[in-house]
Image (cartoon, rainbow, N blue to C red):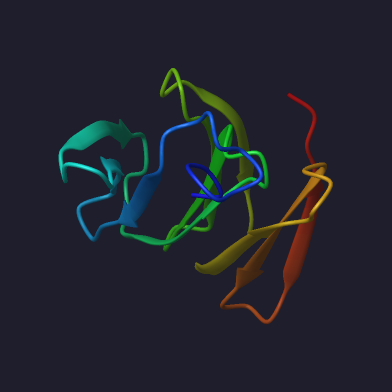
Length: 115
């Protein structure tokens, strides 16, 4: 995450996000290695995760072409987008107003984001 000591967001905890073939996304506390939160909504393997520049949000993309955006603090799912093909990469713009998803159908979808 773009958080923790030495980052632009030093007062927020440093986290690691992992994607899994079981459809879950896990947030880990980097300091002690404990699982901070499990985000469960995907029904297919999750291939990509990306923190927003502030570290407040996390985007996740799955093989089913499903993009979810999560609130990192609460673990609440706040946005969805369904595309055609599998998602292999997700990324935020630096203003935290858009999320791009790269699909196996050779399409890149860019969606607007406002919390």
